[in-house]
Image 1 (cartoon, rainbow, N blue to C red):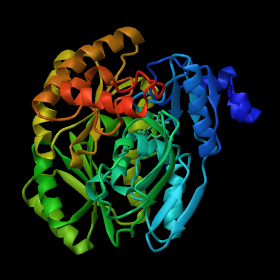
Image 2: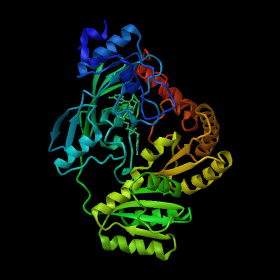
Image 3: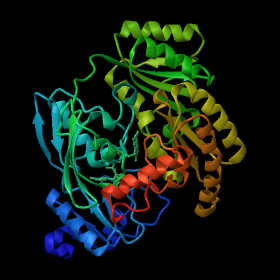
Image 4: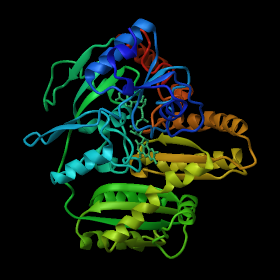
Length: 451
Ligand SMILES: Cc1cc2nc3c(=O)[nH]c(=O)nc-3n(C[C@H](O)[C@H](O)[C@H](O)COP(=O)(O)OP(=O)(O)OC[C@H]3O[C@@H](n4cnc5c(N)ncnc54)[C@H](O)[C@@H]3O)c2cc1C
């Protein structure tokens, strides 16, 4: 049995350009080297691919929108890459259940737009939704900018169809709201980074949009005031987003794009907050933060264009930094530990990277910080990576002491697999490996990722 036996010629690619493109994701630290790219059009195609892979002992790498930041969709070792871009149909909308069923290759933004047509929202949102796929979002349990209000991708999945590493097709949960009939296997597949099987159908629920929202851009000089502002706003309002932007992150975006800072003067720290409440209520809280001298400046957006321009500062950070070979860390601690984490880490980075730019930003309202170390132009990539890995050990020791996670939302993939032990115990990792064996006894599903 070979792919030509069950796929059409246009579903198989081996040209150099395709191997390079589909063999990699957004991370830049590996060299793609797959043997073939396959484009299934149905669950049956996927099941046949698994059957062929088992017979020929071929490793399979699922590939979505390739926006992943942990190299989990990278094929570096002659694997067959399975791209879901041709399984991209929205299949149906259930008006009573408010659920949408779609194929895994549906682009996240297309699902968001589809929800809007129904006067509803799919609230998982982040800067890569124009390219990422719903199957990739499920496999990474994507978070993003609205987690503080709406949770992670996991919270919106009502049902999955999967093809396991044995080729079995399973429907998990069938969109039941209540289902107390044993282990909920869909949760194992959410965030599994393609290591257990393929996601071939996804059902998500939708919800009504927020009624009245306001966006604030605030300047702060003192780090310790961030949590005071967080407490004040989260106790008084329904907070949709609470994002942190460092001075350097804002400077990078302002110099690389057409967008300007919405406040007059630069500050050490900025917060972007989106709230659901009336303008009067929000202005009262804003005034309280000023009276307490937690803020040095701030604006409340006055119209939708200003809102879009404020969000653009935050949403253009990753794109702007991508030109500077960033080494990314995406870590989390409990929100109450954020200041402690920032202080300790800032000290560590200043000592260990004295001549290197370190750019901070992130979803601070859910304890998630992105730390981007930029490669000095006179350092070669290998030496730079070596230095980053050395510092990682120290950074993750701080994370471990604070009870945090080495990966908040980008996943483990190839990038973080050596550091899993800083967040998961030996016993946990062993159980995870045993679970993988149940679904993928031949070890053909995305081998070498996660552990
Ligand atoms: C500018 C930018 C901003 C980002 N911001 C955020 C953010 O705020 N929050 C966040 O969580 N992430 C963020 N990301 C990371 C990334 O967009 C997410 O991880 C996203 O969910 C990946 O989806 P994808 O379709 O691109 O998956 P890919 O990168 O293609 O794959 C990711 C993983 O999913 C697996 N996979 C893909 N499809 C399937 C399938 N059908 N079945 C089984 N496994 C599959 C792959 O093997 C891989 O392990 C950002 C990325 C960029 C570039």
